[in-house]
Length: 476
Length: 111
Image (cartoon, rainbow over all chains, first blue to last red; front, top):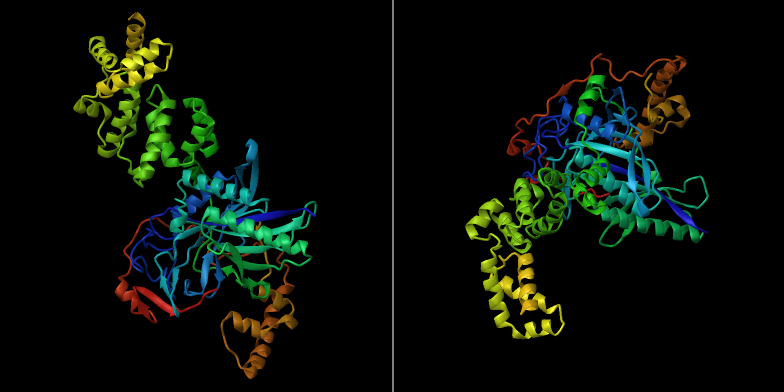
């Protein structure tokens, strides 16, 4: 019998705000433990949480980007649970009236097809503290407690680990481009749980679902799902039952382990939080959020292809990173050769950045300088080879290419008299290549060309050198 | 009319609707209370009475009434996204049951 998987994802995203969800403590990542805390985020009794308007507005913006219905009326609930990372014994969340309901994220499948993955809801809640486990005790750092956290719940619309991977990637792209979150998984800004079940193909009802936790990377999600689908399928094939339970993914071991079974499922006992007033989303609030909507990645990709004449591949690479796309546009918009700009960005710039372990934001080269460099090469003032040398210098010093060319005397030699001198010298030094060329080996001219370039320290105009060589060899 | 996206009957509502379902051990566990057998008996009887009293509310037809989210008629109590000073760590850690490496130390609980 053939089986298929049914996958739904719950993605938690830390919103990009300066202060926490319900208090003024800083949200900045990497602070010394327990330095960004106060009675509110430590869960002291008797404190009064007050909503961060930026978190609310970013959630509304997310809803607009994924085509959700933004609720006119939304409220806050307490979700009861007992764990040291949440000492007031409840998490402030949204239960039955989330800010955003419904929506969809479009994913790309093999062969250029697309598929819409439904979103059930997106709501706001507060993040919990970070626990570190020691031999016999645990240590708790509350810097993360109370950071605004948005939970995006998908419909069970995915059928393979690859689709789940594509969904998270697409959602992440939307959230980063909208300035909603940086979605850095290493910093825990994007976390993901999954529900997965398996059923015989053709069956309408879902199989018994298993929840998987602790998938810390997007590729980890793919591995965990692939393992779990295979485990459930094998069980069904042997005539066994899959039990409804929560399992933990162990990436090192490459398998999932039971965390808790249905009998031990949490009973969260949600009830309205009396400390917090509801949110009434007005037309004005939606209009304000609409003004801040970014161009969606797919639209931007199409525009790059049209406006800058880029191949689909280039547009895809550039748009996948919002900051990189912004950098490219600044350089391309003023250039006569946007495709050349793309070549420099995709090969030289990305290569250098990854070598130096720097982000595009930390790049010393101004976009305008890249425009200038392409103009210098296209105008024949410097050769492409010298261009790379100038680029390396720009990357290290941040100087403009014009200045570097001037300082180092790198201007391309197009003066025929000077070039003829180099050509004569090369011909005199390489009688064998000259003889080969005359014997009909046209390729031998490249060696001579190389010699001329070497003699001119790379500054000779290669096209002119070729012409002069041809003339001299054929004429002589 | 607001439409709730998700609705699930709460444990207590179920129990209020059917007091025979009432499980004092389960409720005590949810509140992390340890009750002796005699306490269980006593409290079970008391809570059943309480629930039976609250169950009178079920006689009201509230099908056309919107659920109250808050008793105070206020909405959108928001603050600007501005960082305010936190409390000094040394001060806050004075309230920790135990501390080490600038962390609150608690018994190890791993799920």
